[in-house]
Amino acid sequence: MAEERVHAFGDDALGEHDAVALAALVRSGEVAPGELAAAAAARAERVDAALAPVAFASYGQPRSAPAGGAPLFGVPSYLKDNVDLRGMPTGQGSSAFRAKPARRDAGFAEQFLSTGLAVLGKTRMPEFGLNASTEFAEARPVRNPWRTSHSPGASSGGAAALVAAGVVPIAHANDGGGSIRIPAACCGLVGLKPTRGRLVANDQGRRLPIDLVTDGVVTRSVRDTAAFFAAAELHHRNPALPPLGLVEGPGDRPLRVGLVVDSPIAVTDGPTRQAVERTAARLEAMGHKVTPATLPFGEDFSRDFTLYWGCIAFMIATTGRLLLDPGFQARKLDGLTTGLRRRFHREFLRTPGVLRRLRQAEAAYGGLFREHDVILSPVLAHVAPPIGHLSPNVAFDELLDRLGRYVAFTPVNNVTGGPGISLPAESAGNGLPIGVHLSAAHGRERLLLELAFALEADRPWQRIQD
Image 1 (spheres, helix red, strand yellow):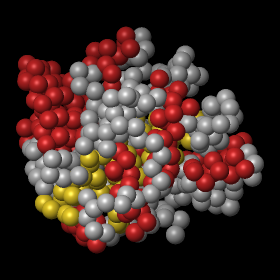
Image 2 (tube, helix red, strand yellow; image 1 turned 45 degrees about the vertical axis):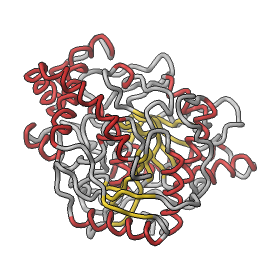
Image 3 (cartoon, one colour; image 1 turned 120 degrees about the vertical axis):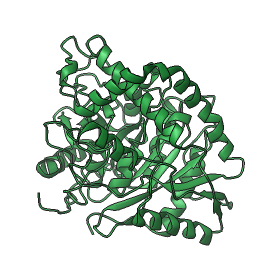
C-alpha cells in the first residue's frame, strides 16, 4: 500500500470541531444529533478501505442517552469491540467464535452512554486485546492514518484510527497493558488511563486475579478527555478516590517532575528520546523542576508480567466456551494468544510468586511520588512500527521479543493501578507522531490533566489535516 496520510475532515456538520464544541452546537440548536451521526457515518465509509477501523456499524440506529441533558449529548462515537452494548455483537477481535448481539449493556457501557455520546458501532482490536498492533492472522489490519504502511498501535487501534482520521472526535478505548496510551501515542492523540476504580469496573478485568483493565477514551484535545471524565463521574463516583470534577485548564503551582528516558528492558530510540527530553525542557521553562528518576521495575517485573499475560491467554482458551460462546474453538486462536497460553502452561507453577510480586509493585509505584509529583517518560521505546512487524503470524518467540522491546513503559500503570496519560509531543522523520507519558499517584488524574492542558497550550498538537 502506498504510504500516505488518510483523513476524513471536510466541510460537513462535524467540521474540525472537538466533542466539547459539537455538544455546544447541539445544545444551541445549530446542529442536530442526527446530522452529526450522518456526517460521521459518511466519514467512516470514506476511510474504511484505507484504514479498516470499524468492527460493526449501526449507523441507522445509533445508541444514545434518552434525553438531551448529558454534557456530551449528540456527539457521535464508537465503543471498542470488547464491551457489551445491547443489540451489537462483541467479537473481541477473534476468529475463534462468532459473536452474537449482546443481550444487555455492560456496566461501563451504561456509564459511557450516560455522558450523552451516541454510539455508532464497534471499533476493531487485536485478538482479546493481547497485541500492541491491531493486526490479525488472516483479516486485513487496521492502519495508521498518519502513515498507512504503519501500525496505529493497539489494542484500541480502531478507535485511535477513527479519531485521528477525523471520523469522530472521541472514541472509547480501554487499557490492560497500554491499550489506551499506545494507540494514542502512535496516532497523535490524548489518551488517559485513569486510576483503577475511577470508572465502573470493566467486565473482563474484574474476573482477573489482578485487574489490569481500565476504560477511557482517546481524543484530539485535552478538554475532550477532561469533559468525558467529568461527565462519567456524574453517573458513578468512587468514594475511595478524590473527586475529579471538570478540569478546564493548567494548574498554577510548580511541580516536581521525575524524568525517565530509558527502560531497564529496552533501548529508547533517538526520536523518542529527543521528544521526551525536549518535553522536559518545556516543562522546566514553565517553572517546573525536572530531575532524573529511576523506575523501580526491571527485568523481573517484565518476566512476571509476561507470565501473567500468558495466564490471561490461558483463561481465555479454557473458558471461551463457557463465557463467550458454546461454539468457541481454541484451535482458531491466533499465534500470539496460542504462544502465550503455551508458555503459561509450561511455567504455571511460578504463578503464586508472580501474583505476589505484582501485587507488591503498587507500593513501589507509590514510593516514586514521595519525591516527585509526576513522572515523565516515553510511552513506547520506539516509534510505531510498520504493519507486519508485530503480526500474530510472526514466530512467537520473535514476536514476544519485539513486543518487549516496544512496550517497555506502560504496563507498570496497569499492574499498580496508577493513572497515566499519553500526549502528542513531536513527529519522527517519517511523519509518525511520538507520544510522551506522564504518570501520577493514585487518584491524581486532575494533576495530569492540568499539566496536559499546559503542554497543549504551549505547543498545540500537530493536525493531520495540515
